Image (spheres, rainbow, N blue to C red):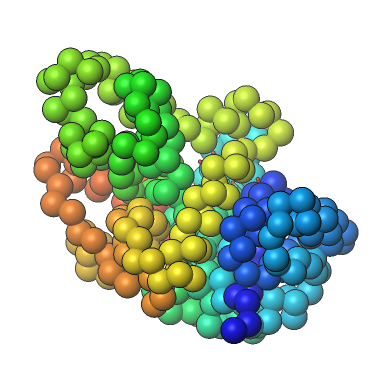
Length: 321
Ligand SMILES: NC(=O)C1=CN([C@@H]2O[C@H](COP(=O)(O)OP(=O)(O)OC[C@H]3O[C@@H](n4cnc5c(N)ncnc54)[C@H](O)[C@@H]3O)[C@@H](O)[C@H]2O)C=CC1
Ligand SMILES: O=C([O-])CC(=O)C(=O)O
């Protein structure tokens, strides 16, 4: 059987890390695409030259033409610009929306059957735009954010409790911004919900609130430290988990930005919710029961995503509703 083909649109910090991880995991042959000449070619060759050391079989190549992504099974999009200190993700909207128009056209022409994972920020608006510009069915176009935000939340909790990361399970819903909703009640250590761990004296409500806030600010914390760009190792690992779930039909339940059509009382908007990812892309949207406080936080987050999509519609009325 021929190997899967994985196309990475954008060969910057995340794109290069995605290529390396996809190679190490032998997910398929890898094409890096970028508008900058030499960058995708150089990264592809560098990673290919590491394959004898790590012993993985994957063909890697770099291209500057969309024809190179022809027939891709998975497309992961990081094309665009990242933020710098002092900026919010939303400041990237105008620049990255134009990039999504080009990328969507390239995918529509050369990889219309692919499972597309968008990473470019502001995530929920960019994945909305990418679905419109590519015209692919909504179950084949998802955004990566919830896996990353949950991974950050889990990491902070494992550190707080001094337990293995393997025993921590968390869910973060909503838009990928300041209003994201880390779901404390549905997050557990070895199956024990966080509120019970507070009762058991493992931590305090105040400490938990601080960890929730650190999760919300997780992206900005890295931007503040790096100064030249944003996080890339954990974002790449998160998108690879989603790609693997699709390619191996794993039916993983992962928080992703998915198009809602009535679920959570939302229509035609991409918002982070738990979904099942398998061979048919987004196979199911999981509607969790929320209490009034959680629902209020999710509503606020949805409104913020709606505002960003409206800004996109003003800038590019051709994208439609
Ligand atoms: N969804 C999430 O959770 C996260 C999203 N991000 C976002 O991912 C994006 C990429 O981040 P990095 O890889 O760190 O940035 P980067 O600047 O290292 O890489 C972006 C690449 O896109 C390329 N590019 C720019 N315009 C293009 C176009 N029209 N067509 C094709 N390629 C184009 C650039 O040449 C560059 O190589 C940013 O928008 C960032 O904000 C970053 C981290 C997490
Ligand atoms: O914060 C940023 O700009 C990049 C990002 O989305 C993240 O790391 O969560």
